[in-house]
Image (cartoon, rainbow, N blue to C red; front, side, top):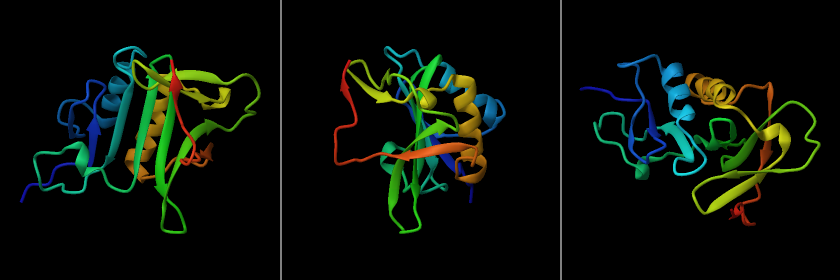
Length: 161
């Protein structure tokens, strides 16, 4: 029995598939995908642990309980992660640098019509985000050197661009 995965992705162009190292090492692949985000037509990238690694086909419906996603452009990205907490429930967080969150918020595109507002310490370049994604790929977690701000999903998370 062949095993694919264990992580799947939705590329900036909206295609889904397994993340593997057949063409390039996974950290390089993650950086390449994040570098394609242009903040205009190509705004998001995500990976998640696939629910059926024996299937050659993976779709967005196969997203499990946890994932990591980025939105924006290669120059300015927000990174969000969904993790299962000690309470056994999934929580969505915005990842931030461990530094003061002072200053005006930044509006980052999530698609051609909508954007999310984040704090200055929650803006990453593609290179920085690739390191966070690679750590998540290796460990299913975000390194303790970053902060996690839980999102209140009972309120709107995006606004018109």
